[in-house]
Image 1 (cartoon, rainbow, N blue to C red):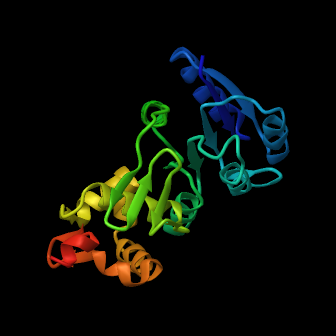
Image 2 (spheres, rainbow, N blue to C red; image 1 turned 180 degrees about the vertical axis):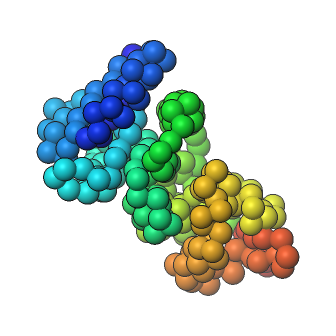
Image 3 (cartoon, helix red, strand yellow; image 1 turned 90 degrees about the horizontal axis):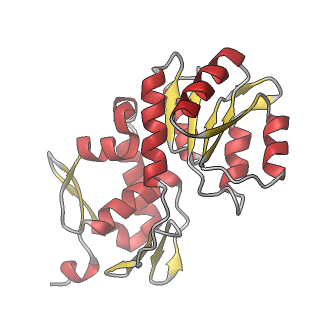
Length: 230
């Protein structure tokens, strides 16, 4: 039975989500503070997903997210942020730090359950062979991208963009398609920052940044090195 951790200090909300997840066949744990959450992790519990509130009585829930993303055991566990903090900056920061989804309170319980199922399905362990395109190698199991055998230091969002482009060389992705792939239903909140991420990626890739081409009036595409040399 897959286990889910809810970090939420509002008892009614935690109980509502817990009850409905249990009806779906999950085993659910609930903690209400940073201290309790870290104690839970210290017991090396096996969990499949975390639902995380940000406003906790003893601190910011993002501290838990930071801990998970630098932890060997919990690094790849999906996290859904469930918070009343719904400003664009809060969403961008949460996703940038490694959250897999962001839901703003008040929320649709049915939607949260569906998002949980979707993330769990996506995170099922699959062994895949690294993908090599030009000087790039994409290792999806490790969530890593190498350029000429050197690991690229990428944020979560940068990885999502570049991995999609590498997997689909020459394919033109419209802005709408990229926004939906990266931020899902909340894409409207991030339309202004997509170009900034592309710019940052190009800068990190140095000369290879030219591989990410702007298709005027449409979007972006990835053209590997050998194609540029034809």
